[in-house]
Image (cartoon, rainbow, N blue to C red; front, side, top):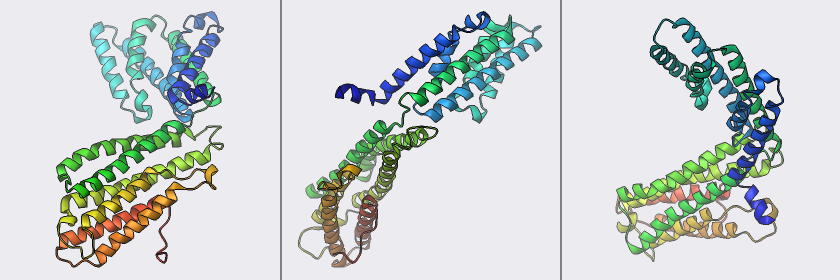
Length: 364
């Protein structure tokens, strides 16, 4: 039973169930319509498939934009066909398609614009004998199916896409923590990559960030016109906060790791305390990686020991060591000193973002 429940949380499974049910209902309703329209009943399931999207808002938008595009294509085909009857058929088709492509540039249609060309050519192929009846049947049944698709999406476990967003956030946490850990390991081994190598290795992290941002946007869209939005509002808000915090931290981490890679302050001999600069930097970056890797405590775990709090405390201690190193350093190399200062500031801001508030400067 638990396996079935987990499977039903998969977005692709939910969409499969919704689209199958919507298509079946649309067909059943369409075949009950009067005879002149019922013979085109197969267009209703098409409308249902078109309208079932990951969110209720996207389903409704897809429904009306597709129908508008289809009607524009039909109207264009009929108008141009009547005006170009004396011309060769090939020329008429070329003109219709060219004009349809121009109409598709209308931004309101968005990704559904290609239906203009499709509908125009379809009208020329099978609808010219009785264009009005064909247009009403095709567009009407498509709209009917789309309406059923939107209704099914709204009623049948209307998606908030939380599962996908959580996975994207965790994947980004892993990538960002690995990003920091790689630099820390390199510092301990004295094998910091070149700027070009580091830029290439950062592409995987950037891809993970893009996927996370996209998932967060889908969750935000899914909350519109969704009857479950209030029930899962806390989870959606947590996803938004975590995603945006990781996004900000990723920018800070990119800056501080690039400074370490480009200026390599640990090799400039600016520290005046026991232990090399590279080891102090490595400890700081590893501690930050542990904080990034640990998810915030969920609402039901207030009384449970919080691993994240312990990780943040350890990171504060490592940051204090880095700050002490900076304060006791002689400015033997301006670039190295300023790079080390920027790394320290970047780590402090990253921790403040991850903890959700600035650290009290009066706390040791």
